[in-house]
Image (cartoon, rainbow, N blue to C red):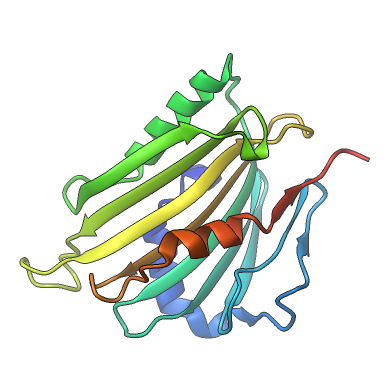
Amino acid sequence: MPFHRLTLIVFLIFFSGCLSTLKEIKDPNKPFERKSCSLLPPSGSGWRYIKQEQDNGYAIHFSKQGISPSHTVSAIFLEFQRNTNFSSPEHFLNYIRQMKKNDIDPWRHKIIENKWILDGRFGEYSVQYYTVLKDYDPYRMNPKEYSISKIYGYAIVHPYFDNMLIDILYTEQGKPAEVSPQFEHEALKFIEGLHLKKKE
């Protein structure tokens, strides 16, 4: 499976299973530095992280303990080399739309809201996406129960580094009453901590 196509469900399983192995964030004001960008960790207390590097990409996974065993809050940064050329921002938008649709399991998830728009926050090739799902997990719940998953993120063609894509997202999953009413505000605050760099 390509590095950037790891699904959100894989990340949530990863976090719920190994939160104790993640490293503590000692200074929330100290950014993670890459040649292409810098990234502040999510705001608030209790966040932990782990880095992952492969030949074609790099990731930082953040997570913190939810208010119950069924509640998960995570933030993910992915940086990888693209193998697709985009003829226009609209071409990139359609590519991201299809990629994100493929990450949703139609047997398990029911889409409540799904949107992708071109947004100039990080340059011409910058797509904001927002998804809300009902998650009917057959391994954790009875058939009548479900959790809510919210995902807010940006997919970006780096404007200064050739063939580089960045995907940054914030996600929360839990029972309907557990998901924060401030989710979008908290997600955007994390995303605003990403600063793209120019080549030196």
